[in-house]
Image (cartoon, rainbow, N blue to C red; front, top):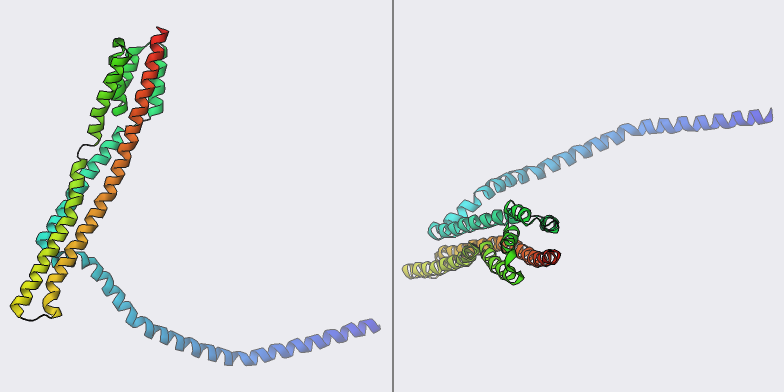
Length: 273
C-alpha cells in the first residue's frame, strides 16, 4: 500500500508540473508569434528592398551580353574585323575537312592485319588483296601495294611500301598548310588593325590640337579590339590544328607498324612456299 500511494503521489506531482509547463508555453506563444511575425515582415521588407534594385541590372546585363559581340565587332572597325572573321571561317572549314578525312581513314589495324595473316597463312594472296581493296584507309592501301609485288621479292615489296607510305603521309597532311596560314594571318590582321587604330588616334589628336582621353579613346579602342579578336581566332585554330596533328601522328604510326608486320608476314609466306 505504501508503494502504491508513493507511486500515485509521484504521478500527481508530474501531472501538475507538465500542466503548468504547457500553460506557460501557451501564454508565451502569442508574444513569440507576434515577435516572429514582426521580424519576418521586417526581413521580407528588407529583402524586397534589397532584391528590387538587383533584379533590373541582371536583366539589363543579360540583354547587353547578347549584343556585346556585335557592338565590339562594329567598334573594332568592321573592315578589319571582317577579315579576321573570314580567316576564322576558312580556317575552321579546312580543320573540319581534315578531321572528317582523318576520322574516315582510321580503321582497326590489328583486326585488319590479323585477317591478312590468316589469308597468307592459307596461301590465299588474292583473298588478302581483296580484303585490302575493300578496306578504307592508308594502312590497307599500303598493304595492297605490297601484296601486288609479292612475287618480285622482299626488297621490291619493301621499296614499294616505303614509297607509297610517303604518298599516303602527304595525303594525310593535305590542306594543313592552309590552317597554319590562317593561324598566322589572324593575329597579323589584328596587329594591322592596331597600327591603323594608332594612326587614327594620332590623326584625331592632330585635328583637335589637344591630347585628351576623349580624342585618343576612339583610335585606341580599334587598336585593342582588333588585336584581341585576332589572338582569339589564332588560339581557336591552333587547338584544332594540334588535334589534327595528333590524328596524323597516330595514323602514321599505324602505317609504319603495319608495313613492318606485312614484311614479316610475306617472309613467312615465302618460307612456306
